[in-house]
Length: 179
Image (cartoon, rainbow, N blue to C red; front, side, top):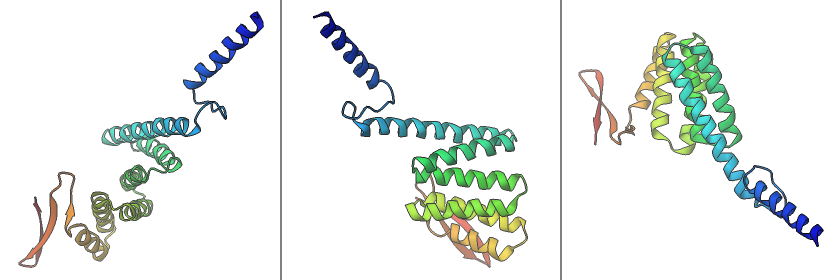
């Protein structure tokens, strides 16, 4: 009789502790729920690394920001978070620009642009195009710089929901926001 009670307590304890951990026991815990919790935790970790990188970048700690953003990018890719991946790629492009590695900056901004187009992120697309324009301008490739900046200014919504519109008057392109 005591043996059955001990077995019941052991099984109950095992099931209860398993519900609070990430261990998957086939037939006892739903795998999907555990994976969802793991994915959410990994996304939170990547988001924290992305924000940490921004703080480091703003303090001029470019190598530290680079490491934070590389870690964030790896996690975003693991969990297949395309918007996060795009944000990390854009940030890496900016840090490589600041470190003077312009070819890598272009490479990362182009990857950001491709993802932004793929997922329909018009704000991200505009940021990537603008950043590419800045890098090409710095390199003296003014035609590519103008091309990217012009693409950026064509009817793209920004974070506030207004749209950027380009207008050419007297041979000068100007940018306006409209609601």
